Image (tube, rainbow, N blue to C red; front, side):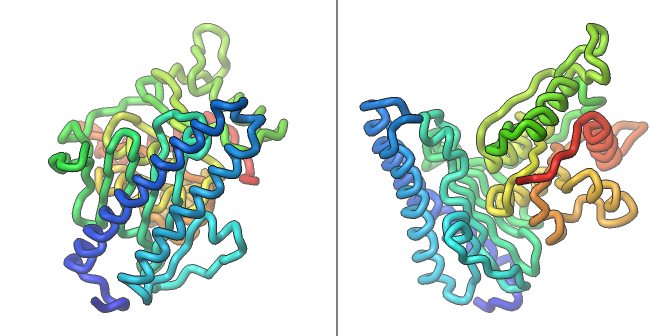
Length: 329
C-alpha cells in the first residue's frame, strides 16, 4: 500500500484493521471500567484519587495499544492522540495519512459507569477526515464510515451492517422547534462560559409563549457526554443536531466522516459557517477540523419547496441566531 495515494481498496483494508483494533481496545476499556467501579465502591468517586489515576492509566493503556498496532501495520502513518498530545507530542498536520485518536471519549461517563463511552479512531488524509470508527464496548455498537463509501452501524460482534441513517431516507426538519438537540456543559465551568451556555440552552428549550425571549421550544436537549457518540447519533438519526465548543480534533474526526456519509452537514463556528455560505459549504477544512467549534445537522429530506442542503443551512442559521458564542478554553 502506498502512503501518497490511498485508493478506495486501501481504505477498505484500513477499515478492516481499524475495526479489529477498536474491538481490542474496547476490551481494555471494559477492563478499566470494572477496575474503576471496584475502586470507587470503596469511597466516593470524586474523593477517591485512585479512580482518577485509573482513568489516566487506562486512557494511556488504550492509546499505547493503538499506537503499537498502527506502527506495526502502517509504520509510515502519522499519529495524533489525546494522551500523547497532552504529554507534549504535537506534530503539525500534513498531507500524509494520519490517525487521529481519542482512546476513551466520555471519560466522565467512564468513571461513573454510565455506558456511553467509546474509542474514536479517525484517519486524516490530505488534511481532511476520510475514515472513522467509533466503538462503544458497553453497548457493543460499532459505527464505521469511509469517505464516499457510506457509513454503518453494527450491533454485536456478528451483527449485520446497518446503513446510516437507520430510517433509510432522511426525514424533514421544518425548524428547531421540532428538533432533538445534543449539547454539552464541557469542562470549562467559569462564570462567563457557564452563563453563556445556560442562556443558550434556555433559549433553545424555552417556550416563547411563556416568557422565554427568543425561545425555540425544541423538543428537548440531550447531553450524552461523548462528542464521538453525539456525532454517531446524529448520523444514525436519533439526534437532529449537535453543537459544542471546546472539543479537539480527536473527539470529532471519526464522527465527522460517519455523519457526513449519512448525509449530515458539519461546519464550524458561526464565523466559519457564514464564510462557507459563499463557497465550500459542508467542506470540513483543516481550519474547521482544528477550530474547536463544531455543529453537525443530520440529513434532511428534500421538499417541493426546499432542497435538503438548503434546509440544513437554514437550521444552522436559526441555531446560531439563537445561541451565544464563547471562546474555548
